[in-house]
Amino acid sequence: MDRDSNIYTFLFSAIMVIIVAATLATSATSLEEIQNENVRKEKMQNILSTIGIEVEREKAPEIYNNYIVEELALVSDGSIDKDIDAFTLKLNLEIKKPIKEQRFPLYLAQVDSLKYYIVPLRGSGLWDAIWGYIALEADKNTIKGAVFDHKAETAGLGAEITQKWFLDRFVGEKIFNDNDELVGISVSKTNNDPNGMDKDDNEVDAISGATITGDGVTNMIKERLQNYLSYFNNKNEIIAYQN
Amino acid sequence: MSKQNNKPETKPMILFINEEREALFSKNNRALLTDPMDDNNPITVQVLGICSALAITVQLKPAIVMSLSVIAVMAASNVIISLLRDLIPNRIRIIVQLVVVASLVVLVDQILKAYAYDVSKELSIFIGLIITNCIIMGRLEAFALGNGVWKSFLDGIGNAAGYGFILIVVAFFRELLGSGKLLGYQVIPDFVYEMGYVNNGLMLLSPMALITVGLYIWVQRSRNRSLIEKN
Image (cartoon, each protein chain N blue to C red):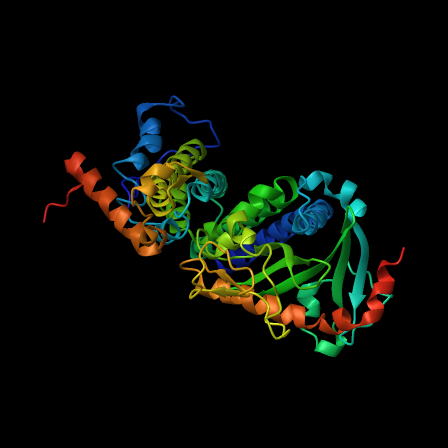
């Protein structure tokens, strides 16, 4: 058959597309379960690490339930939606809905006798989505720990938000200012406190060359946390902890 | 482009069986592996694949993983295109090459996500960037379409290794001078910092990758005079 004829060209591309599509579809569906399992374990690992429990990814599911006592899906008015499984809630889809229709996952944790509130975060960095978890102490103000991750931030610059030295700067910082207004944590380039000694300034030191990613972290923390205020201010929420 | 450009094989070759049997690692075949390391380096001589060389040389580790992935994808795609070289319609050959490279990259990405999740996280965006690497398309077009499977395989490995070598050299200097670390471990001792040494933040930005590549080309040409253009 003439290799330059139209029929051959069409035939070749048709067969090629079918073979490629079949190969990729097979690999995607057959590996999907293992991939989702990895993501699930990593999520547990991240949640645990915000409250200071460092564990290998493979072992995370075993001890997850020892520390996380409750998973809640909150409505914007502070009530709890009992029909929804908070752990499997997809924040990337929720965040696109109007505030009133969104459900906000909240994880309640207990380590020894100390209680923590873990809030999942999601926002945008320079290139793509960034997300993370932030754990608040029982005063719902002081940060116990934070974890951030990203889809496509620049290696060596924006991607450094996942590093321990950056996350450690958040520990002990407050999300409310002196007037009890929620200000979150500002990733600041004008922070005159590079060693993070001042824990009441609502600021951490930014990463050079990662301005937009840093601003993304700032916005993400404030935008997400303000949705939990109505729940945090609700006195009845203590019921959730009465075992 | 490259030296092997216009040397399509005259005798038909089916897989590994050649009429005049050539040793697997004959002098010609060895040159396919070693040429791209120096005389015909894809980055410093052919000036291909510069974009990814700028983007992923901030740290040593992603540069190494990227080099390994490019070697895998390039060897595999060179072999596939070489196998199909008598079947591919000339008019859509670029599209066919793209489809082969893109599907291989997606496949590698899927497998990494399932069985080497940490590596896949480390690579994140870079794995997709392999598709856009002009070295791969360049070698498919210039070599695999006109040469046998074994030669194409060696050519793929050689060129990807030449690319990876530059990546690692540049990343070494950028991570060392920019962050004072190698592979994430601090190598510049604390007392040097106490004496007033400061990491050069400029090394972390892409312009310095270009300058580092430029310096490498300078050194390479002063050692290897045959690379200097006559005019």
